[in-house]
Length: 113
Length: 158
Image 1: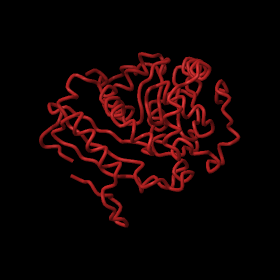
Image 2 (image 1 turned 120 degrees about the vertical axis):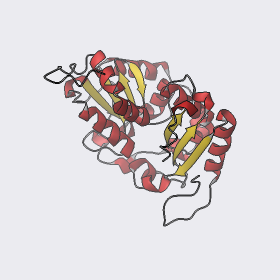
Image 3 (image 1 turned 90 degrees about the vertical axis):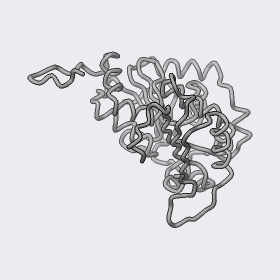
Image 4 (image 1 turned 60 degrees about the horizontal axis):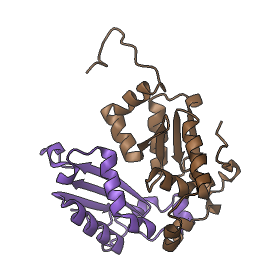
């Protein structure tokens, strides 16, 4: 589980947005696997973040989630489920998610990256 | 080269710092804006129907302002989408569009790809469709790119 910011220059603790994402996705999806990585530092320089003063440090996350709830749904439906659950977080400054959404049957046991 | 159906001001392109970040700065504003005017909806509908491939992105294909938008442009380029069948709209140059496209597609992030007026998805979906071959199928089926000619080898069959 990678919960901390990946930037070696920062060792910031898990922020409120990340905690909230984790709580909501856990409740919605009851995932067998849930990894959330804060990538915000990688995007501080891009135009919209510069305009917002570099963002609040919780603007960009990668989410890797495996859940039974995804069974029988296509990628867009899966992404919409997550976006709908996190509308409050988007309103509060969350800017982008990089999503990997898999059902348990789609996970290859050997390929855990 | 770019459509002007949305009154997009491309003169502002080179000055991304001037773009107001209202959606980010004010959480309450995002809630009060959770509707989209008929006018804005009609303009977007017209835009996505105006050409086979429409990409809403940050910046321009030559100067993308975000890595996700850059990736989307590159993927479309790899598939050889011809310039005359594709239009991009820079949401950073049009704050109204930036907000309304999210409501229109019911999708909170940029970039957003439309093919033949249908919402395809964002960057992650585009990349995974690229890897699986679905994007090629979609672009061929939609008449955007020609089907690959089965030449001496028929490796395109699977």
